[in-house]
Length: 194
Image (cartoon, rainbow, N blue to C red; front, side, top):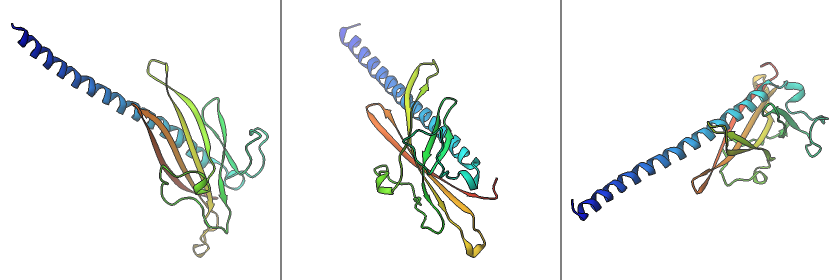
């Protein structure tokens, strides 16, 4: 073999290996993003299910001061358990009837701020996510905006209905870029859905 043949073979080998490495790195980024999205979704739906289970008349939202709440947290709020060690009092924008509902009807843009929507920032985290090896991976910080609007429809004899709008935002590192995800969940509560 000549040196030229060896160099061509090495060039082909390096090109092939770079393709494999690039595919591996892309696959890892997609997997990490999927894991973070799944963790966020699980946390969010745990919170939503707790909101659905809160007593309609007394605690959705609570306007009385909870003696266990942090001193800087003022009503109205809802109390939810994030995990076994962490309880949060999530402040809400509450619109009693008769009032114009203030919850957004579409998902706000990622550039929107709590102030621009008359919302209240509820920051949960950073929560450590574990990798399969048990070491800490990325940390998850979730920002929630919650609106509870009473929306009675007297013309249809519906008098006690509350619409709960939850907008959530989280960010994660995707290589060198920081990606921000924002979405919303909306559900109705009535006095009779217990």
